[in-house]
Image (cartoon, rainbow, N blue to C red; front, side):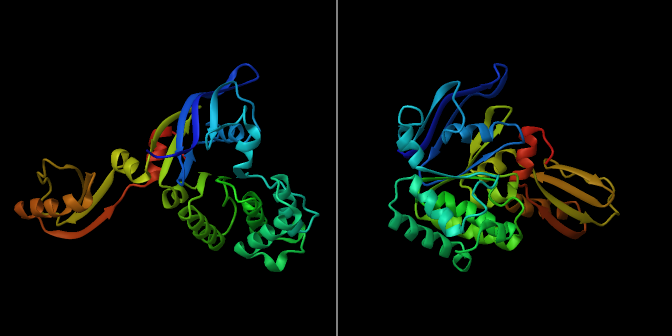
Length: 305
């Protein structure tokens, strides 16, 4: 049986007695998974993260982190989590090495161990040469690295990343992706929220899509795409045959372009070519278009990205 890292049951959160941000959600996040929590603005993602980390009070329901209730056993549960929020939340006047060591101290590391962990994080994130610089002297991308390093400095079991690559350049984004994959492969549970849906598709082995305070789908990205996506095969044909009968395929014809909808392009393409040949239709060009997690996300949430 898969061990659960974060277990959420019937979780509700009501703000000001009227705004129901979470409507009794249930969620299991497997230990060692790279888990995406996706949803449009206002869907309840940040509220759920806030409850996991003790920043938001629960209206009803329960949350456990590695078996520790976040209310009854909050000291142990919070020590197991590292949070990198979307907004930068460190002192801009401190040298970044001290920022990291100070954060490690909050989790009970000795002064010696805290600075050793700070050095490790600085090296991992390419910041060793900036150790004595204050955050004010760093670029936006380097500040983002410090933010994630701060969440990891006490070596938590669970890492929560809220929009970790927002506003960073492509090179840094891929550097962070590589490092996050590495620590996930070594067993660390990572929970990711992002509006870059392709980021979740590239990194996560499981995602939950939340909308209007409810979990509407949870599965592997590939399974969601297979179930709800719409792959296409576009075939440009010789226009001499204006109205080809290509049933039983799901298709439409516009000018000399035939567009087939298919769940499995690699399986259906040979059959489509055979059908076209049977009808003496000359093929001029073939292109395929595969669905993405972003298309599935838009379909499920009815929101435009």
